[in-house]
Image (cartoon, rainbow, N blue to C red; front, side, top):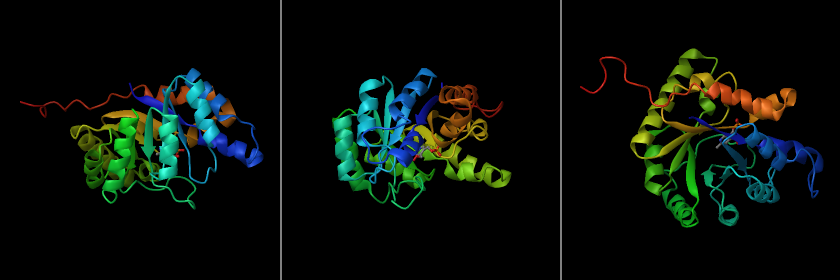
Length: 257
Ligand code: PXP
C-alpha cells in the first residue's frame, strides 16, 4: 500500500503569521498531526528550517512525544540541526538543500557533490537508529551517490512533474525520468518516496511511477483543509492513492522467458 506522509509546515506558517515569538498560538501543528493520523495518514513530516520560519523545536518534540506514528524530520545537513535530530530521534530524517531566500525547498540535494559530509551524517543517524532519506532529482548520478553515502531512502523531487503537469509532452518526459529513477534506486537497494507540488489533480498520474513507498504532501492538503477540514482533506488524498499498484507487471510477451 502506498503511504501518505502529511507535511504540516503550513499549519505552523499560519500560526507564526499571528503569534511569532509567543509561547503558544493557533493553529497548533501537534493537533493538526493528531487529526491527520486519525484520518489515516501513515506519517507526519515537518521541516525544521534553520530560520525557524514555521515549525519550531517545541513543535517537533511535542509531536514526537504525543503522536504514535512515523515522524519524518526534513532538515538541512548542518551541525545545529543534526544535533536537534539526534536528540529528537524521529523515525527518519529527509535531508534537503536549504536556502534562506527560497519560499519552499526548490531543488534536489547535490549528493554527488557532498558525499563526505553526507556519509558522516548517515553514520551518525544510523548509530541513533534513525533512517535517512535524501531529497534528490531523479538523476542517476545522484541516485548512485545516495547509495554510496549510506542512505536507506531517496525522496524523488516531483516539483518539475507538478509544474509541467499541464504540458502533456514535458510531463510525460518528466514522468519517464521519475519512473527510471525509481527503478534504478530500487535496483540499488534504496527505498523510494516522492514529494513536492503533489496535489489532487496530479497524484493519479504520478501513480505510474513504480516502487513508491510514501508520498509526502503538504501544501495541497492544507489548502483543501481550509474549505473542507483537515481530516476530510487527508481522507480524499488517501482515496486517490488507493489504486497504486507498485511495480508494473511486464506487458504480455515482454516478460522473462
Ligand atoms: N517533500 C519535501 C522534501 C519537501 O521539502 C516538501 C516541501 O516542504 C514536501 C515534500 C511537500 O511539498 P508540498 O508542500 O509542495 O506538498
